Image (cartoon, rainbow, N blue to C red; front, side):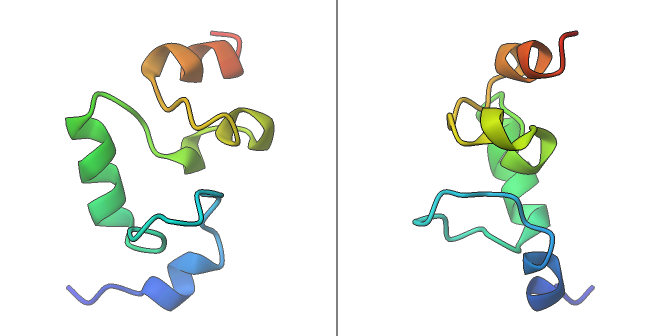
Amino acid sequence: MECKQDENMKNCACTYSGCAKQGLCCECISYHLKMQELPGCCFPPAAERSYDRSFRAFARAWNL
């Protein structure tokens, strides 16, 4: 399967400028799940900018 990094970048919500996985959704999701986190695209903008990708931060951001 070919990665569509350029197309994915149009919707990538990650604001971490040093991230080498921007637009590489498969790598990003795999990385964050291994760290017991979710990628930034799962968070609303204000919560994403905190860089706290924990499941707890996700639940707090969405009032779950």
